[in-house]
Picture 1 (cartoon, rainbow, N blue to C red):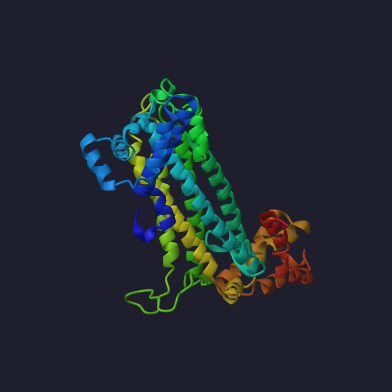
Picture 2 (cartoon, one colour; picture 1 turned 135 degrees about the vertical axis):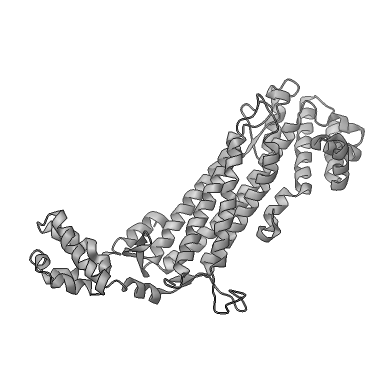
Amino acid sequence: MIPRYSRPEMTAIWAPESRFRIWFEIEAHAARAMANLGTIPKEAADIIWEKGSAAKFDIGRIDAIEAETKHDVIAFLTHLAEHVGPEARFVHQGMTSSDILDTCFNVQLTKASDILLAGIDRLLAALKTRANEHKHTLTIGRSHGIHAEPTTFGVKLAQAYAEFSRNRARLVAAREDIATCALSGAVGTFANIDPAVEEYVAAEMGLTPEPVSTQVIPRDRHAMFFATLAVVASSIERLATEVRHLQRTEVLEAEEYFSPGQKGSSAMPHKRNPVLTENLTGLARMVRSYALPAMENVALWHERDISHSSVERMIGPDATVTLDFALHRMAGVIEKLLVYPERMQANLDRLGGLHNSQRVLLALTQAGVSREDAYTRVQRNAMKTWETGADFLESLKADAEVTSAVPVTELEQMFDMAYHTAQVDTIFKRVFGD
């Protein structure tokens, strides 16, 4: 985790104090369940809860024990016993390290999911507000970076809203998929622990029991989770790239907010660079990079190995912290985005009406001209605009092969911008509902 790209709420989930507190809660809930079953004395479970809850776990002490034992869970249990006393012998009955590690990891990922969902919600709110603000703000749509046909800036933002709505649904599903608990003991057979203990702990921790865990929770769940984060990051990059292109000097239809006192370049005082969206592009690359090792973690040896462990110690915190930061940075960009409708209109007018070429093409075909001939007639007039700057409509009106099929008055009507935006309300209804 890099502090520069971290938010405290998310980093707290991955702090050692949080991890050890979750480990204790898993052990204490398991002890309570065992006491209910009569496996351990009820008094012992009560003492474990009381003394463990009051304990302030000493990270340095746990690290020192681990330096000797070379085992993190044993180091924690040894330190917990220092707080609990003789009743600590009833802790971890019939359990194995993966029961604690995997259940804790999934608790952390579900908590991280809730924070990420809140970030998506903030971004969705910003996109909805700005989309409605610019629902009818005309702008040129581009394909291959070249002027195509008109759209509105609101439609551009509505597209992003729809995409992040899908991402939200994906993350909800990924959260549900990852929210499982395993307390099934060595090789997952429940030989030394009652399945009821797992069910009890799962309910207390907000999880569901893993159907079959083989000692570890199957890593296909984690692969899907991190793949989902990668898709969300890719959507952030898509939106960030759009802002970056719109901020280019030659386009300048929108740009990131430039705050008082902000500097764009150490050498050129005039610069206003899209630094936030460029940063988001880089962060998205990092989040995507965590998906591949998560997929490679799926194939473990037999019932378990720990080849996945070192990977998850890094990608768990890094992927969630980075994506959380990126979501809030992207939301801030949209909330404060500077939009220039006049520049959009100027760019729209730049090619002298060429954005109406398809409408003229369709009118010619409907008038009986073959598509091939219609395309040729429209294109030769469009090329005059490209090459000489001639007004497209005037060129069409002067072309006898065009006006012989479509009268001048109809041609003029075809250059009405309302034609291109007639279905904006339909699009908005589909995206935002009634």
